[in-house]
Length: 180
Image (cartoon, rainbow, N blue to C red; front, side, top):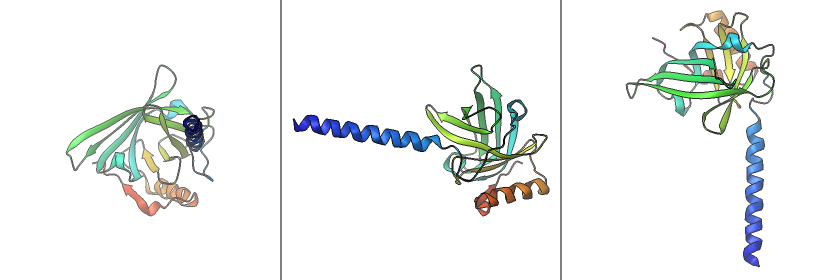
């Protein structure tokens, strides 16, 4: 009898842990930060150069980092990230997919490079011509400045840094990506 009781308790703990993990995974944007509305997916597709980022293990020691977005046949967005690992002297790339969390005109997405596991990808600033973007993850540990060119004008860079600071990001932690 005790064995069955332990099984039920164990199953209950697993269900509760799974529910907690699911609910924690539902948040794709930091509290107090807003994804842009009026987003136009087709204009966002194409190649972007990473101007700056918060460092994290998947981009450690990377330069010449780019992201290319295109449409998959199922309507999701194909994500191809690539860069040069200057410590290992080799080009690296990752292929993933992104989906909109809500409507396609809200720039709040979730992206996966590892099967069923998704992370937040939120465009929180973009210029009218879709040449420069400020993107964050699900929390304040992820931030990117992106440009269609290998550089970003100081006026745009400063504007996006102000937006990020006002949203609670520590921009002093940004790593400025070498694109040459």
